[in-house]
Each structure stands twice: as C-alpha cells, then as structure tokens.
Image 1 (cartoon, rainbow, N blue to C red):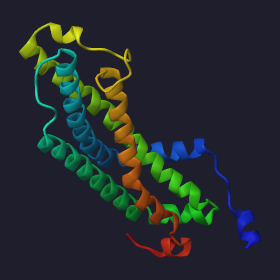
Image 2 (tube, one colour; image 1 turned 30 degrees about the horizontal axis):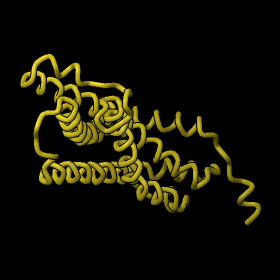
Image 3 (cartoon, helix red, strand yellow; image 1 turned 180 degrees about the horizontal axis):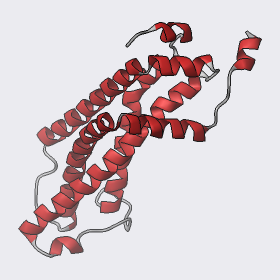
Image 4 (cartoon, rainbow, N blue to C red; image 1 turned 90 degrees about the vertical axis):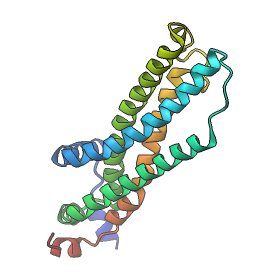
Length: 205
C-alpha cells in the first residue's frame, strides 16, 4: 500500500490548469455550447437584478421582482447546472483511456477531480462574465429607452457595495455562474477520479 502511494505523482496546480485548457481547446465547440447555456442563464439573472437596481435607484414606484420571474430565473439556473453535468459526463466517457493513462502514470484521484473542476470553472467564468455584462447592458438600454438619460446617473459601480450597484451585480452573477459550474461538475469529477485504470484502458469508445 505504501509502495503504491510512493508511486503516485503529485502534479502541480499549474499542470492541471494547462491540461484543462488543452482539453477545452480540443473540445472547443462542446465547450462553446456549454458556455452558451451558462451565458443565457446568467444574462437573464443579471437583467432581472439590473432592472431592479435601476428602478430602485431612480425611485420608480414599481412592484418587487415578481415571484414568477424569480421562478423562471431559478429554473434557468437549474437547467444550466444539468447541462453542465451532462456535458462533463460525456467528457468523462470520451476520456476513459486518457484518465486511465494518467492514473497508470501515478496521477492522484485528487488531480483528476481538480482537472475536471478546473475545466468546468473556466467555462463557468467566461460564460457568466459574458452573460452578466450582456444582461446588464441590455437592461440598461431597455430602461434608457423608457426613462432617458437619467438612467445613466442612477448607475453606480462599487460605490455602495450593495445589490443595487451594477459592479456588485456583475461580480455576483459571475460568482453564481462559477459556483453552479463547479456544482454541476462535482459528480462527473468524482466518477472520473474513482475510475479503475485497468478497466479504463480496456474500454473501447
């Protein structure tokens, strides 16, 4: 047991990051499709929060965020998580031999988990960053068409550090996107890490 432990290689985080980037490049279009799901869900969340922030800052009399809209936001985020999980499970299936080879060469289970979580978090970061900016800008333009130039005077960026601050909304949306991406990748990452190297090497995809 001790001998097997000694054979395991402790690969650095930077190496996992490089492998994650290379894997995303190889599966570029699948990564783009997964990112689009994240982008759309986070754009919707950002637009709802931005609309609420603008109406609050302008002191426009309006109802609070309707329960139906909140429900749709939650459902879109859940669909996003399911999409990420499905995409990562497919990646695990496609990479049986790659994972088996890494484990045969001594990669720790922790390294395999780290690798998949990194891939997912990278997709989540870029997808949610694009989505939060797009959703915020779209809602600002919509409110501008209704309220005019005073909309721009109501926008604050990290001035009050509250949910009514546009900068905080973008940061919050990116954090939510990355968090959901990691959450969706936990099960696929665990599945990959527990793969038996000998079995993985025998699988024909």
